[in-house]
Length: 263
Picture 1 (cartoon, helix red, strand yellow):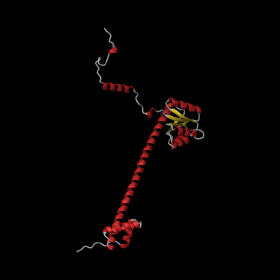
Picture 2 (picture 1 turned 45 degrees about the horizontal axis):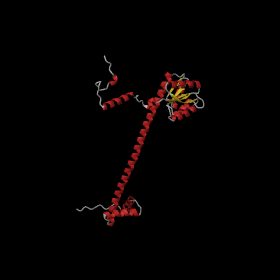
Picture 3 (picture 1 turned 30 degrees about the horizontal axis):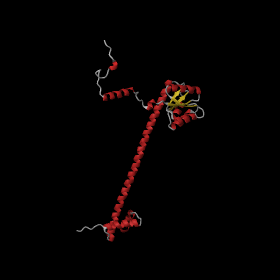
Picture 4 (picture 1 turned 180 degrees about the horizontal axis):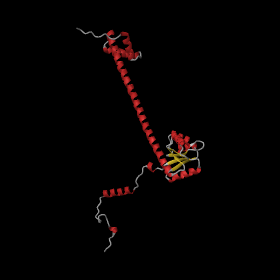
């Protein structure tokens, strides 16, 4: 048997016939298949966290645990004041805050951070004390974890806190959009009311001018056109609004006499 020279094989010799367009399409499909699937930027982004813990050993353990689980620790604080400053500076996705700290305790620091709506706060407590939990919740903390830190407790708490924070901000955005729409509607209503008032004033002025014209025609033998021109000219010359001038004419001369019906 004679070995086949594979170098001489062509699509035609193999019974495969492709047009130029088909070849281009096949090449594009192959390139597309080779490209990695795009991942949304937000999903691919590393979560950032500020850690506030006055005990250096505990802080190191906490930082190591977070980094081992894909978090990026952007700031480490040993007291509440530092925690607030670092949170303002880095605007992390979440803050891990110990309750007992010098200078400013964790609850007070959490209150500042939550009032400014910078990031969700997860409180770290030595014991599950109801009073501390109530204070932390009142300060705006989204979750709390008791020591010693365990991945099974800490990581879900972080996810819950970030999820709640996102939901609250979505709700706030919805409320703000609703308030803006309401404000726009109120402003539009004011414009329409002003236009309506102007139209009503114009209509009232026309009625008064018509009555004044009738009086001038009846009392001074003006023609209709002449009476209107006189009112218009007098209003301009004496800088008196036509409405006021018409009211003065009506007040002085009274309503025009009704037309008599011949029997």
